[in-house]
Structure formats: structure tokens, C-alpha cells
Picture 1 (spheres, rainbow, N blue to C red):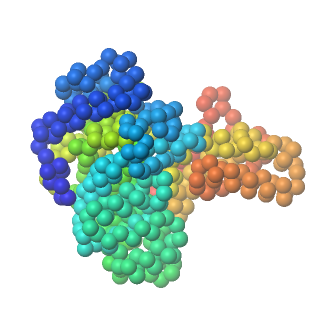
Picture 2: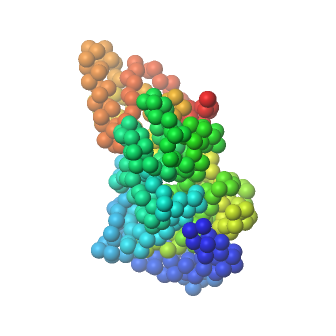
Picture 3: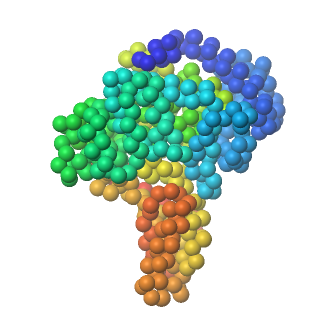
Length: 436
């Protein structure tokens, strides 16, 4: 363990700590007009919260609240005390903004150090970070955890696969951090250029930012010759480091001294017992710049409070099994169908009738294909005009969602209509089986 005092704390001591932190959090939230009003409407004051059971009386926070107060309307500290801003895509094309003080960054590096240490990382390791750097929290979040441990970090970021292979080989990387789909793509590309990953120093990998299955874990471990660990995080809460697997691979340990978790019935908001799937909710107990009260993640999972065989006492969450909203996670990027619709509506010559098809090419990298009808005049025009229209749509879509997609232009009235809610998304990844 990186921090046995926090990771193996007694449940009674943890509950006392969480209650104290929750009460302090409520006092801090009165500085934020949104929360001040929400708590007043609920008739709640900090002194009214006398046990963790009272948490259910507090109001929820939703992603729409962050979007509605873009960019800094939910800050609980002065902007001059904010030293970092990150963001993830939202339904309207606006970023969901998150902010950090210096102490928030120290907390982030601490929870990421716990994450990496649970997979055996020490200061003797060389850690290749292939998560994206920038507004996305993945790259820098992992980066600071590596530095906190004292290991050597290689900030490779995403893309340029052949260069990544060379860096892993030449720098003697022992740990790989990336999306699981990129890890498999790396294995395929290595085989194509004659690099034997088994002959390299790689021994461990930490994979997250997109859903992945146990079958995918087995495939990664077989093709890369490593031990694969699942990690979970979300930008709104802090980034990577919210929860992590230990060597038991029996659920992901949540850093409960920092994040207070609940699982609720998404329809009623009522809390659910251990083992029952529902929507995951987090309260950020220690965050300074942009704390969140009962934030509804939209992720579906279940909790397990039994003490793990590894000795950690923190609650474990199952792998996320789905979403309560229509958000897609494609190559680690949050994509909403409404963003795609917005992009298409700004391209003259195409209609609002479209279909989104998500697949996994060669069982490795997620692909995004959008079928969209063109109007009759454009379709009857020259082929060169259609090619220009396709390129314009692809370029505009990239500007909105930040990843490449293939636009397939189809004839008018090709895409099936519905009398009810239109079926806009076909996600084939859920039924795709990994084959050797």
C-alpha cells in the first residue's frame, strides 16, 4: 500500500473522518451561490448533518449544473487561488469545466500514487503514459501520481504508435498507462514491425477512460505479457484516481477519505444496498476549488463493503456496466449524440436524419461512423460535390467532438423513421467478442 493509514483505516474511524469532512464541505459550499440556494431550498444547514445517514437529505448535483454555470460559476475559491483548469466535453459542445487549487493537485497526486502502488509500481519503475495530455485529465493525472511515487515518467501522450513502441523499447518502460483499446492496438502494431513485447521490460499496465471487459483484460495480458489493472475516474470529481484495482482483481477500491460514494436508484434517488446495481454518486470531501455535493455520475455499478483479501478496508465498486444517459465513450472521449446532431445541422446539404454506428475495428480501436441523409438536390449533384460535402461534415464534426469520424452520405429517406423516440445509436462493441 502507498498509504496504509488511509487504505486500511477502520470503518469506524473512516466514518468519523467522512462525517467531519462532510460538515466542513457544507460550510464551504455556502460560498457558492448555486449550493447556497440549493441547501436553503432543502432546508439544510451544516449543523443539521449529524451522521452519514443524513447524506440522503442533501440535494444532488448533475452534469447540467456544471454546464449551466460555465465556466467558473461553481468555484468555491477565488479564481486567483485556482492553479489548474481541465475540462471534458458536454452535451452542448461546451466544456464541463473542473478546477484545482495547489492542495487539490497534491490530493490528486496522492490518490494516483495509491492507484499505481496497488499494482506494484515503485520508484525503480519507468512508466510510459500514453493517455492524452491537455484538457483531458488522464495524462497529467497519471503523470503526477508517477512523480509522487518517485518513478520515472515518460509523458508520451496519445498517437504516433510506432514512436510509442520505440520509446517503450528504448527507455525500458516497465509500466504502460493507456486506454485498453490503445494497448491492444499497440500489441498489433508491435507485431507488424517485428517488436516482441515479451522480450521487453513491460510487466504492468493501468487501463481506464473507456469501458472494457474481462475478455479484453485477458487479451491484453496475453498479447503484451503484462498484468493489467483497471482504474476509474471522472474529470468532474478529480480525474483518474477515484478508484483502482489491487492484485486481487475483485473490484475497484474507492479512495473513501477523499470521495464519499453512494449507489442510488436512478429513477427515485433512493440509496441501494451493497450488491445492487444503480447509479454511482460521489461527494468530493476535500476538494477546494470546485467541490461537488452528491454528484450523479451516470455510471451504473454496485458497491461491496467487505474487507478485501489485500487488507484494504475501503469500499469496492464493480466495473461500470453501463450509463443512465446517452453518453458514449469513444477512445476515451465523451461523445453525446446531441453534439453530432448539432454539428450536422451546421452543414448545408445534409438533413437532420442520421444514424451513429460505434464499432471496434479488429477488436482493438473504437470507430465512429455517422450515416446522414443528404437533401435531394445535393444527392443528385456531381460526385465531386458529394465528396466535398462529406469532407466538410467530417471536418465540422471533428471540431465539435475532437475525434475523427467517418461520415457516410446516404440517399434521402434511407434511414428508418420512428413514431416514437428515434433510434440514433447502434453500439456494436457490447456484442463484440475478442478472438485470438
